[in-house]
Image 1 (cartoon, rainbow, N blue to C red):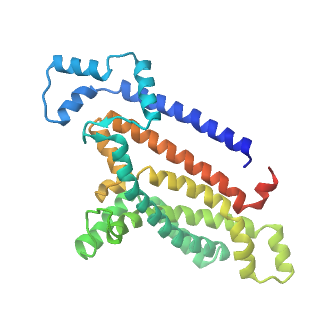
Image 2 (cartoon, one colour):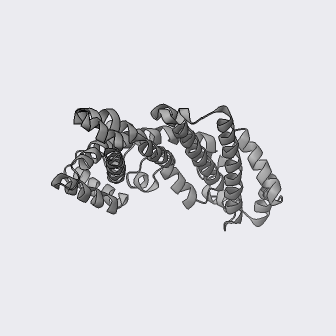
Length: 312
């Protein structure tokens, strides 16, 4: 990716972020409920109408919509997303505190997924239409079909309730706390990635260069791992980028089931308590994460596939 393309992508990211910020603010502005009333309710105070109106004037909620939006956007550009009135803390500090636990969960679940998906996908492709291929495809079909919450509850029943090997509530502080949430996320991802790896490897195995290498007597293992697998990485990297962005944005269902202190559970709490500032900050946070990850994925193409550098 050249300098002009990079600047173009950065400009596109900025435009998309402004659009997301506007839509996010508009939806929270139009949503039912009064943020000032919710703020007092969260602190256990029953405010009078006079107090509510006075607070709305002080916080600028009675200003025109565009005035409120540009004031909020200006504060966001300075790193100030406001204060969460349900948790009584700055939104930035809440998001930052939950990022590291979510990052640990993301890396561990992706590691488990790759350990399972890559060998199974390659094995299924190499032994196409043989018993091992049918077995792997059946497993992946089952893995894609079952929802995450059911897998999580089943793992809790087996390893926490029956066997008492792992804690039910995950604090995210140790390997034991991370294991069940990570495995829950990895199962569904492994099924999807196994199919993707199988498809990509099969496509490469039918290429002319593979036929030529076999005709020259090159060993099958060298063809597979030296040529076929590296050329199959591009679609895998694209999917990995989307998965990393999704996981870093928080996996709400799994985090709620295991009481995991990540971004997903924070977002659920913000929505249920109608904490508008926290919801707005979370949406912008996730949007930035997605766009940065996608940019990194695009930049990595130049190093994975030399043909990309030749096209510049």
